[in-house]
Amino acid sequence: MTSVPLTSKQCRFAEWSYLAGGGEVPGSIPNHTTFTSNLPPPPPYFVHVLVYAAAKRSDLPFALPHGPPARLSDALLRSSHPGDAISLGDVRWAGHNGQLILAPSYPGGGEVGSHLVFTYRRGGTYLGISLHPWPSLFRYRVSGVQHTSSLAPNPAYPQILNTLRAIVRSTS
Image 1 (cartoon, one colour):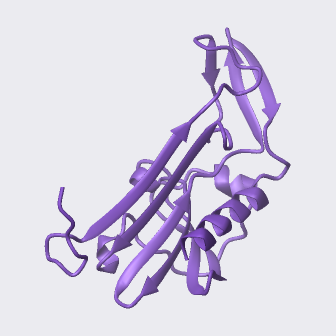
Image 2: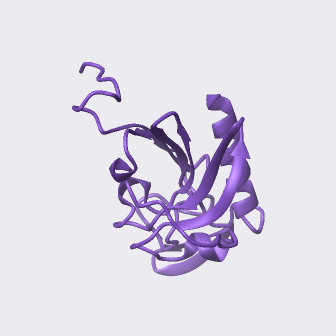
């Protein structure tokens, strides 16, 4: 592979993705567990971070939201909204003014589906860092029997937001 500058007509969207899954969720049994939560478990069991850059707004993986911001909550993170991204308001992180967004759920959000995204502009380039959220309670079935494990403090969204903010700060 060769690098292509973002100013090139060949490159409209560049991304870097980190996807990792490790360890079994407490209480689950390999080959006997069916995960029923619509979100993956929290780190260190599952992590998906995506960093992207786009030359034009139309090259972003989803349309940026308009309108008043929504209030971030665990219920909102669990919601299905395949058509539109949801604005969570303007924020300033690591010296960058940007917007916090909940990406459209899969399939509308594609690889970034249901991610919490910090997006901002530097020069004419749109930049973004995203993190897949997780539930505070994780539901699964072992041999047909429903189980629930508390894998994150309740509610989970403050921990998710702090994790994304730390990732953004580490990139500056």
